[in-house]
Image (tube, rainbow, N blue to C red; front, side):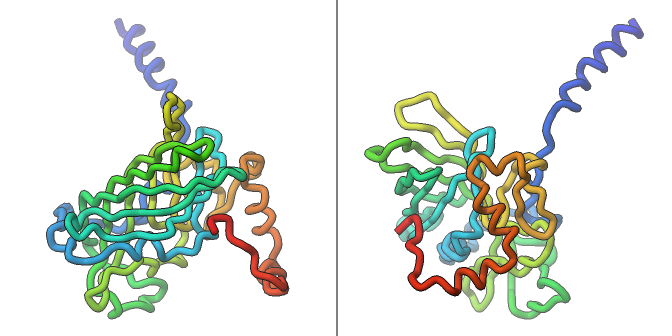
Length: 260
């Protein structure tokens, strides 16, 4: 019996060592939240700015188990005045050269406050914020079914916010800290009229909930070489070119952005 027990324990332990570890799963980066859901106290505010704040070049996403690059641009957000927990969204997605527009909604389910506020490096923002916290929501974005390779994005969203001057603002107070990210969209993409379904995650400044061998950056997002062939080559090259800002400033004509 003792031998059988040991054999069972070894068998059960094998998958544990074979599983991949996921990183960037804690959007709060160790900051504690209160357990109480205070959604009723916060629905009077407009959270739209949270999803429009970050420049597109700092929004990173993956689709599929091999972490192919996907670009997501949320172009407009409007609050549903009849249902203040809902926000209508319009945007576009791009995988390789395939661009699809999408419409949908974000439905807020929980709003929590932090136990203690953070005020950035050396407390440089102390006194400029009244409350800080985390918004949790569900999202459904429907791509235009007339466009090729289109489908539905579904999943859970987490967004960090702060309340200042009675206005909800995007919380980037800890932007300079290692591991910072915001607006974590974690879910799936499912093709219309098909069983094809892929994981699809994106976020501001990091891709949330991915294998630790994908994002090898410490201070900021950086993609491991093994994934460059999945649409990340240009990103890797830009990271290598220290004079990128100077190069871009010399362009004679503004470059048309992919979603325009």
